[in-house]
Picture: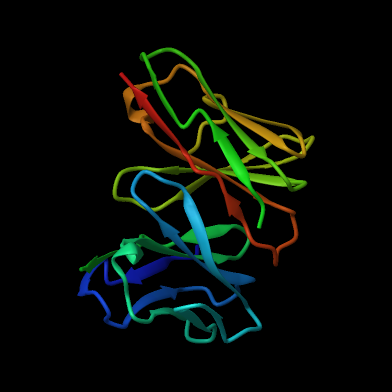
Length: 109
Length: 116
């Protein structure tokens, strides 16, 4: 069974700092990997989708990479802002979506 | 991406009653819908997958007689929690997909269920 791990579980950074969130998965036979943002008590907002044949995707200040062979993905957030504070989830799609446990990010003004 | 709505956003009910949660795909023909459950400080766990016009497929450990799923059209799926108990209190989220493996999933805003 696919297992998805996210490190760190929580992260607190000052505003303006660049940061990296990590996601690892045990089964490299995936169709795609998706990064989501979840605000407290809310649903999921899709940030980036990387197909299994792709190496990275970029959207604004966000950049996600995928190394399928090593079972790793990173989400890079540039010039962090207080509004980036949320829980970030990665999910890999095999037969179904498997979610990581998330990284809770706090950006301090 | 697709716009997905859920109703209600919050519901409080007494133990033993049944609660219905609706998931609607507003601008997307959703051949497949997924229901997830999220307990506090935990990640999402898939409960079941439903395909329009057929029976839902439940994940191991999820009671199909307790969590009734109906996917009667390409825009609506419902989850009914029957004879709810306090341990069913959770955040329930649905998502939609067009059905092919490479497509994204689009998530609803979630429903917070509290069983007293």
